[in-house]
Picture (tube, rainbow, N blue to C red):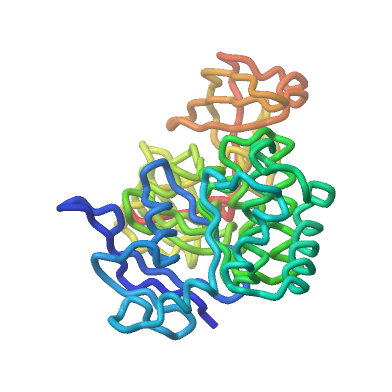
Length: 358
C-alpha cells in the first residue's frame, strides 16, 4: 500500500518552476532514493513531502489523506514523519539531550525517554557519547546524532537530504550501515536524496531520477541503471555507448538496426522504420585480437583509438564503423596487448543491448 503519493506536484517561485508535474508512488517499507544533478529539485521535493512548503500545483496523499487540501491535519501527519537535513543541526547540549528533545517536546515520560534514547543510540553506534557536547563531534558523528533524533520518535517515514554529503569515507560507511540496518530491521519507509548514484544502488529498493524539476523515471535500481527510458537518464547514470540508429528489419523479436552503415542486432519490439537509440554498457563488450567463435550476434572489426588506465580498469576506445567504449581489467589489457592503433574485434550479445525510442 502506498504511504506517499504525489499527484502532478509542482512548485514554482515567480514564473520559474523548481518542480513540475511530479508523479510519485512510495510504498510502505520502501527505501526510495532520489538521484539527480545539483539543482534538480531533490531538496524541494523532500520539503514538500515533509509539508514544510506548500506546492503550487498538485496534491500529496499521505496514507490515504490528502494533506494539501484545506483543513487537513497537517501537524498530525508531520508528527508521523522525520526529516534529516543535509547539514546536521545539533544543539549546544549533550548528545543524550539532543536525541531526547523531540520526545520531551511531545511530553513523553522520563522512563520512556531514557529507554528510547538508549535503544536508538545503540542503533546508530553512539553508546558512550551520552554526556559529550554535540558541538564537539565530528561531521559523521553529528549526522548520526541527527539520524538518532529523527528515529527516536518512531516515524513511519524518514526523509533524508544528502545524508552523507561532505563526510569522510569512514563516516559514509557508518551512516550507510545505520541506514541499511534501519531498513532491514525496523522496516521504516525512507525517502533519500543523494548525488551518489552508487549509494542509491546500494541502499535503495526504488530509485527516481529527477532532472530539471521533472521526475523522468522511477523504478528498481536495475531498471534505472540497465533499462533507462530516455537518453537524458541514460547519460546521467553513465551509459557511455549511446548510438543513433533505425530499425531496418525484424525476425520475430530480433531487430536489425542500422547505425552509420553498420547493422546491430538487438531484442526489440520497435517497428521497422522506427528511429532509436542503441545503449550498450562498456562491460558487456568483449574485445579479442581475432574473430573468435562466439554466440554473440554482434561482431565488428575495428581499431583501438585510445587506451586509458583508471584504477584497476582499462578503458578502451575503438572505432568499428561507429565509436565504442569497452572496459577490461588492466591484466586483460596487458595479456591481449591492447594498444592504440591495434586492430581488434568487438563482440556483444543482442540481449545485452537496450533500445529506446528517439
